[in-house]
Image 1 (cartoon, rainbow, N blue to C red):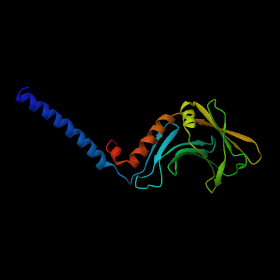
Image 2 (image 1 turned 180 degrees about the horizontal axis):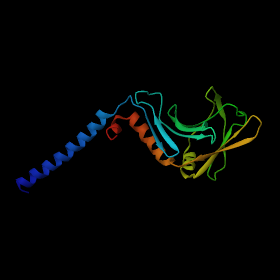
Image 3 (image 1 turned 90 degrees about the vertical axis):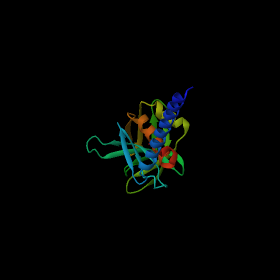
Image 4 (image 1 turned 120 degrees about the vertical axis):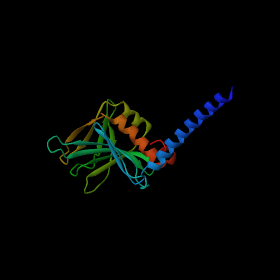
Length: 187
């Protein structure tokens, strides 16, 4: 190789390395650890608290609304609780607590989910996320949550999975960026 070729190769390599270092530095310098984010993906959305708030985590959320009043009837969220992923389902007050609720995903058998507690916001049911449950969520085209009124009658609330895959991907990316300075370089 002659001197000119060597200089061109070294110059090109230096340019590529400089561009990569500049891009990574931009990601670190421009990441605002005090900013929260919320992004919608059709019927689902991803919400991430600021990275400076360590005790909270991102969530993947779907809210099912009453057709007449447009008030939330059910809120389902995938989040972390004590560093483990859980699914939390919130229903308004006035549901029968004893039977819990049922979560049906696609053609899978209904899962029984007990209520944990109630507050002024509503009644909360929580279940741990397993690999099998996540596979059911990813494969499902439809689903429903069955709750029971105080009169004992079952009420089915349909779920939508439009945008779920994109929201889940954003949730995992958001959690990774919140917890790792390395991945902030690529945001």
